Image 1 (spheres, rainbow over the protein chains, first blue to last red):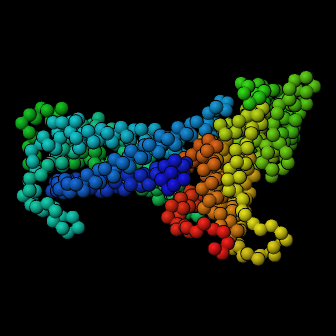
Image 2 (cartoon, one colour; image 1 turned 30 degrees about the horizontal axis):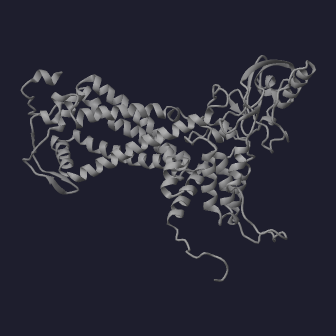
Image 3 (cartoon, rainbow over the protein chains, first blue to last red; image 1 turned 60 degrees about the horizontal axis):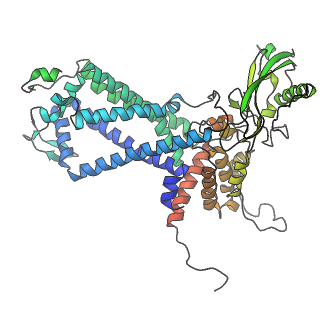
Length: 262
Length: 271
């Protein structure tokens, strides 16, 4: 078989596709979280950051396409592998109650956590990227934010002071003031962390970088990463929900405040 | 508890055995009560005793695969209470003793369940799919003739030890039966690693892993989901580290075969 054949048609090749796309997505969620944690700084930060991302224009679309292709391939590989796995086990008598010996709970639930994470990602995009749900609080429908200071990345000024930008800061806080939405976010990122507990560990095995010599350390590092990732995500809706993080000073609700409260 | 564990008292169990007359026949579980079970009997000896009783009654004895009965041939193959080779770690079915069970236990006995291992009869499965995988690369090509001098080709001790760990595989198929996906990756990984660790295995290293994995897939075995049930059920406790090694070997071989320069010569001597 050709290289493409080996990667897309063989068992190990498809697992490799799954691992590499998973790695890309893990890289994304880490960057996404670090970016989002700027919400705890002055509103200039997250709003400037969001404006910077939109300024990227075609580059933003390159990143989006890489992510969409990664998600697509990750789901494709999971589906094809799972169907083959099911087939390999059927047609030779009943599958009597299998006695699990050591498979972790995270590994046994990885498909189900995957489904919920997919549903969450679709909702998250609908809410904060497309404005299909929570439209009244969507960034396009909120008054623009005027940058107090310039926003810098690695020392480079990327958004000027006084620039009129979308008010992502207020959109996020208004969204998370709804306890149902906040709780859904918390549960979903919890399940995503649980998904990664199996996924990140599996990445090393599939690539061939895991061995007994350091698998104990690897497992602890992965656990630590997943807990840190969960806590990082938890504190954004959590602090809004508990009232510790409120709307910025000077935020004026648009003309119909009733619509904002939903 | 200790006294009870090593009790010599005879006890009774019920064997719930999968009976299937032939490959195409429907199968079902049938209960066989067994009294006066000696805790020092092996599990296969109990099957022998039950079969004696069935033969005397004129019934068809339970067909089960067995050969050496000392855990080195890989012939015996039963899933006992949902676990290949039954309770216990690092043992084959033939090394399972009745002292692992208690009075009144119902013991569920099935063949190894996997589509590539069709049931021949009762508890006997056809594991020829493993032979097909071996034929696709589970060998090294050597010049035959007089035995070569010992240690003519140096092998690092660590590699030799690791290769021996992989070579402990008896090809029983418990890894496949333990896997919820009926994946044969532990078996294939053990064979690929055993030969790939030796200098003698290097010339065919890439084509071996590509060939064996390709045949494994073609035989209808499932894919690894990194849950490591295989190595936990392995009677030789072969580690799933070998699966990681095989994955690495396979990916390297795939990239190498795509980019390695090939001679355009048509071959054939000094021409």
